[in-house]
Length: 416
Image (cartoon, rainbow, N blue to C red; front, side, top):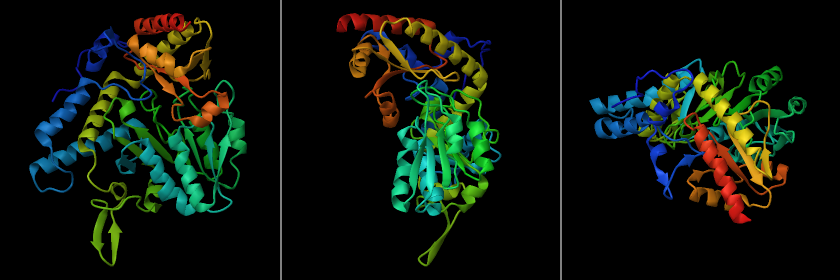
């Protein structure tokens, strides 16, 4: 199995050498070189990740924690290496605070049903923000419907920034949990999570953070963020789909009942009753996506080798360049202009439907996302049914941005 090439990557990132690590970036679409600007949806995978998954199936494939043979031991060690890698990534105090799940959606549902629902009743509330992804809205609505609790929403400004003072004002005694995104998947806004966490802690309110869009781009330290739960998704972190993790404080995990039942989350099963394993395995019933987590461990090692600070610096520079270029396009409106934001640009062009523009850009070889981005309430706030979203990663280039903007020009002419 090969890993991240050990060539020296200068500071700043040597983009040409890094791009060579991502095979898919070399392909063509509709006869034109691919410009992949849909990284907030799913990121591309370096060869180190692809090879790690391939190597697992070729050399190690066995189930985890269920075999007294060499392959089973090797598979378990490879799988558990992902728990160690995620703990490093998040700055977690212990690997045993990392629950391996299929992604952020499962992580949030685990907290909703195992932590929140047993504690909620009529008159209680959960506080979210106006910029949340559906994965950080719908689970709370479901448990509220079952318990008689209600959902409160902290507002944002037209620039796409959370109104922090209103969020704090809404942290009233009825709030039993607050849930916020670290980085908005539509606006790119980076929320001041550490400040929000301090305010929640002062009031004894647990804070869950959706870190799907933050983990690939920011240095993370869950203790410094003052949160109680932090959820990430592997496929946005250059790893395989169907992988992710929930970090939770140990005291929360120990108090939470299992969400799923089945194999490997138990100590002993009798018809009279079952005793469950200690966290985190209590929440990991059934056979997991073993090869996927082997790939996720490789993805995290890749990011660590490259350096998250260099990734962030590169993406800030790309964001500035792309934003300046798009502002020159007549009739183009950008949604989300927070002072502190990630390399995500949501926009519309006057008189052009988002889906039409995305389809025509695809024929120019440019992959962007169009739609509501699983953020219907945010679209309603801006009074639009959909936007286009260009989301950049460290392997993107100025030349790709130039091609993207030129393609928009050609499409605008075509649409009249």
